[in-house]
Image (tube, rainbow, N blue to C red; front, side):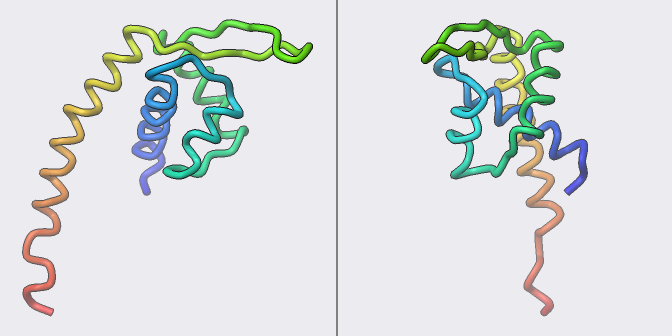
Length: 106
């Protein structure tokens, strides 16, 4: 898969993981696991990139005596998810065009 396409998809997956409630790194990975395999070394650069793009905010809170970073989706992050949903329809249409007629000649 094209690296830029995959990068964009992973960004949207992370935003979707925190869409309904704030979460932290390990939990995000765990929530995504049934759909997408992601390591911490992949996740944390994505979180930093999304924070720089104002798609999420970060707060620290103590949990069991340790500081944990919680990520919260922003209105810009929600717009990015909505844009993805809209763009996805175009991607599906392109896929249909590319694959139309497959299997008819072989």
